[in-house]
Every structure is written in structure tokens, then in C-alpha cells.
Length: 218
Length: 218
Image 1 (cartoon, rainbow over the protein chains, first blue to last red):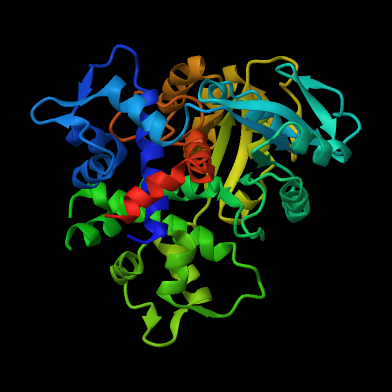
Image 2 (image 1 turned 90 degrees about the horizontal axis):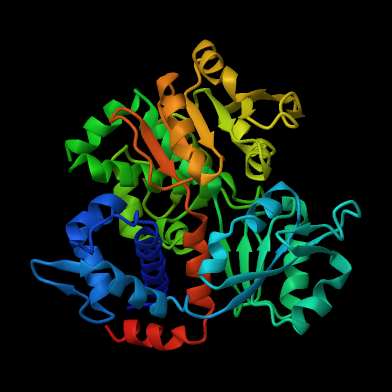
């Protein structure tokens, strides 16, 4: 299997983990692959294959024990480790991410936000300081930051990403611009909010009934 | 093909459209399915199959004409229509979405934001007013709003979604809580920021080399 596919597998494992983590606490203790697959829109055979690679989690006729599966996925995805991260760009989006407490539960510890706006520098969000961009390089290397969330305007994204990479950061969580260049050993995950909005509009549209019928005929 | 798959096809079409829309303007005029598939991590055979359902867009040995394909996807996804939408919750995330001008290019016209915070009510973001939540129902039905982006705290999500649905809104773009209940004729697209962060961490981690080797051995 080529490395490309492995990345797709990790992406699906992340989806399974997110799903299991967000089940209401009153849910049952076990779930069948058919139930999980129905909720996530991923084929049950695909789900079983993905999980099978990492060992035998399920039991015929019983399904997957939710807590056990969650624990195993947590290990596989290395969410049992601490990932110190920073946010570059402390505007609305940067501040919204900083307020998103769930990340901390999974080991993503926000160490600082960075901005060039003097009105923001020195403020604290959830007790984490907004620092001057001039301090980026020294702070990142001193604090062994592994991930930078990029929340700047798109025209500034390449510049700040290059600076983050030069400061030793290997993981870029990119909200700013899809077309950035990084060295081979740096991982970029682009976030595309528009994709889910396009999907919503297409599903919504009465006009799509014809497209659905088209598809259903195949 | 069951209806479930059709929704997955639409989701992939949305990915193709987003990708083509964001190509730098100096890109070539045509792309092969292999090139698109490499960039998106979707199998080339899957891509060809998805597009084939809607007609013959590509030419053997030439690839897909980018502008033509974009136009066709735009029609299929009904992005050539106007979708009036509102944002409920005008905190950092709501304001960040309101500032995201790209949506407007695709026909998503922001008509109002809503909040319960008296300090926010009356302010304007990009010339769009933050209104009192009390006005939600009358505004939504008067302005034929089709989509509501939900950016409230998670414990308030079900309440505001129920109100939006009762006011006739059929599309929920949900940033707030994954576990909400809506009638069958309402479409919910949940946005899970954590999935891409989990994937990034897993790809980043040196420890995953062993998992990669595991996978590559299969």
C-alpha cells in the first residue's frame, strides 16, 4: 500500500475517534460497524478493514466496545501525547480557536498566540498571552512547539509559515491559504470550510433531486 | 446506488470544486485525473467515476479543461444560485465567518448575524447587522433564509437550531454541537475542526512511522 493511502487511513481513524469521543454519555457501550458506518457515511467494510489493520477490536454479534476502541484509536493517533501548539494571527478566528477548550482534552496545549497588531499584543485569551510576532522564532524553539495554527489573512500566510518552519515547527494547521510551499519534512493540514458549505447547499437544493435520481439510477 | 452514496458523491464534488476554484491563476488550463487525484488524495479511478456520472468532461491524453469542469461542477452543486444565510452567535467564530468574503463569490449572501449579547446587537460586520435573537423568526421567514450557520456555545445549539427550523430554515451549518436533533427534511452539515488536528498530529508523529510500516506491509 502506498504511503498516500496510509494518510487517508489516518484521516478516517481521526473521524472514528472524533465520532466516538462525541457520543452522548448515555449511549450504549458497544456499537456495530453498521451503526458507526451509517452515522459517518463510510462503508462498513471500509471501517472494518481500517480497524482490522490495528488488531481485533470487534466481536462478532457484539460489535465494538466503545471505550476500548476509543483508547486504541487514541494510542494509534498518538493523542495520548502532549502537543504544544501556537496560533499565528489573533483575530476573530485565532481567538475562536483559542477558546475551543476541547483540544486541550486531547493533549493540544496552546502555549501562545502571535499577532502584529499592537492593540492585541499583551492581551490574554483563556490565560494564554498574545505575543508580538517578533518573538515567534525564539519562543517556538525555546518551547519546542510542534504545531502552528495559521489564522492570518491569506496574503500573509506564506510569510508566517516560512518563519514558523524556520523556527523548527513541523506541523502547520492551515486556515489561511491553500497554496503554500513547505519543505518535504513539514506536514500541512489545510482546513477548507467552504467544502461543507458547498455540500450543504447541494444537498439542500430541491434541484438536486434530479441529480440524486440520476445517481440512484446507476 | 443508495441515497447515502449520493451524499458522499456530492461531498467529493464539493472537494473538486473547492480545489479547482483555488488553483493559482497561473496554473495550466487542463489537468489530468492523476494530477487532481494526487493533490486531493482521492483515487483517480474514483474521480473519473464521480465526474463520468454527470457527462464526459475529460479528453483522453488531454485531461480536464479546468474552466469548463469548474463551470459544470458549479451547476451540479447549484452554486450558480443565491443562498441567503444568517449566522447565529456573533462571537469570535461567528464574526470570523462573517469576514470570510469568499463565500459571497459562490452565492452565499450573509443577511444578518444574531446574538443575545446587548453589547454586540446593533454592530455591523462588513456592513451586515448583528440583530437581537428575538428577531430571528420574523427575519428568517421574511427574508427566505435557507441556511443558518450555528456558532453559539454548544449547550445552546439545540435550542437555536430548533428555533431556526421552526422559522423555516432547512439547512444547518453546524459549528456548535454534533448531537442535535432536526426533522427529516432539514439538512445538517457538522463541521469538525478536531478531525484535521488529529490527522495532523498523527501524521506528524515520529512514532507513526511504525504504524506506517505496519500499513505499508499490507
